Image (cartoon, rainbow, N blue to C red; front, side, top):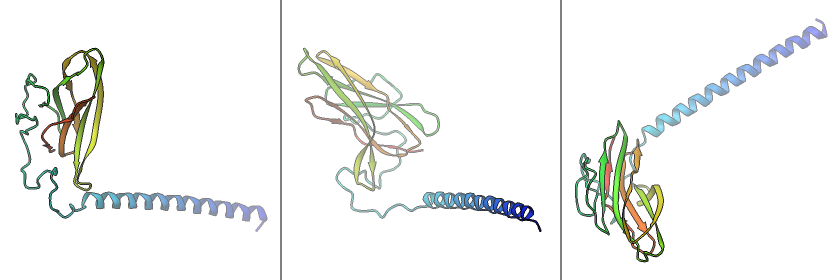
Length: 184
């Protein structure tokens, strides 16, 4: 055998080995990824512990019409729910599948109408692992004037759980809605 033929055989063998290695690596990666996905979806719920003061009770039924405002008004399709300072009214809008949209309203009072006031909306989600309310989404806004009815339209997409809406203005206490359950 000549050296050129030997070099050609070694080169083609090395190329085949490299292709085989890459294919095996791709198969292994796919298998590990699929196994991790299967294991994650079959994970069990953590053991129930003594509920904290703000934790949603584990025995509450899944909500179809949920209570959201501080006035104990049910969530409705109606958007003209009157609110007063210190209250949040929340209405559910129709959504397709797991996408849920809401309209939150509150009255923000500006203590110094000569200055503008900033406020923040917060949609918080209950974390059973941390046993605390975690920020899901926020939005900031502001206005000039004495008082204004403010509105926010948060959306929850494919993330069932317990939620609440909060609004906080400069120099005022945070107003929190009752918790509500989103199921899919």
